[in-house]
Image (cartoon, rainbow, N blue to C red; front, side, top):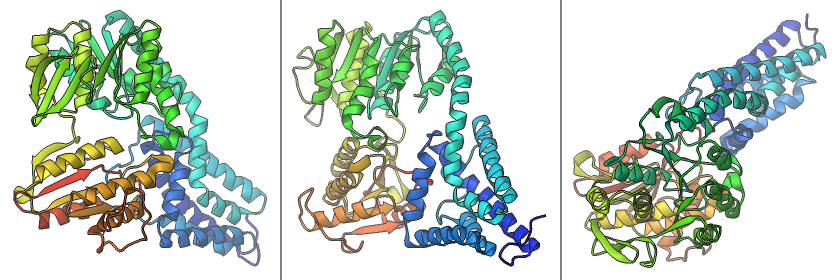
Length: 532
């Protein structure tokens, strides 16, 4: 039996531990969901916990109260009730079940939850045996995010071994079917380019493309095992990465015949630390490929093209700005002029993203697709879902859905489209939570985006807290005529023609009640609800 501590009866002491256990359980569901949404990255849950507890004065005050409950629990165990309540109910805004990203009890999550539960129980039992049960329970409640991260670290090696079995099966299938492999990476533009390539090859080849978001080790293994069949001529593999070595490992068994890099930029800069590391990680796709397709409008990709050519790799240089490239797709007369080898190839209406289209054309030419077939298929290239898709909204308004775009370059393209489509509109609205995972540049890039948006849109609706300050400040700078990086004081939303809402549903409701026929709304990026 637990003895009285600090004048606390055993019954009350037991109630304290029970309350903390309830808090631990509810908190665990919240943070396990975050771990799942962040692909079980070892430090992700703690990072998100810091964001949530510091995102509002109410959450920060609750965290202070929870911490005080832990500190005082050694002398007066009932103080742990405060910690239990805070962990059970907070942080405010992060739900247990999730709206846009609900918890899915996969085999991996069940394993993670079991390991985390063992760690929590071990801490509680150890504290109880030491006569500090309330303290251990309160500390365990407050430490749920850290213990979930520790569980990710402990289960990671075993998960990799388990995934290795599926990888081995996929590698064997690739060796048996022997398709031509087109591997595509880039900070952005991967999915669009993959769709264009599959479309241009699909008229004359049997093509399998990896499904949306199946761009890591487990996803590509699953794509091969579930979709690659005998007789497949071409496998188009999208490859993503969060760090050095990942693409190199993918290419060790999904070895590309043609390797494509669409772009490099600050996407996932928070994880990489610098753009030089991003370039190095993406360049791994070129190490085994006999042919490289590079969008050389970025000078860093131009340098990679030169390096590849020097070591004997066949290189296709693609550009959306220079007619001297091997394949150029240039804005002209309200459409796109396509040049191959500096000579006119075809003219298109404004379909697709020029650089990505050029990369797909280069791949098709490399793989021997007839030029007439490419020209026939180009006008009907597919639009990637939620990437500047146009639709008719409520009351005849025009909706530009760019919710899957989260990079500065894509945001600029989206604003240009809003300007063009909404040239004669009474209302032009941008709905956005801003961009994330941009590291030290996140506030700067979101401020720059808001300044540009305020010069195009009549209203900006900022969703959530993650980038609220940077977006509102940027809109005010535009209103004052400030340069992109000029300092400006904080401003109220009303003065900046900005509406601030907590959730996307509130923004959608505003749009539906205010926009009329001919008005335009751009939904630029969307964040799952495990972001503040």
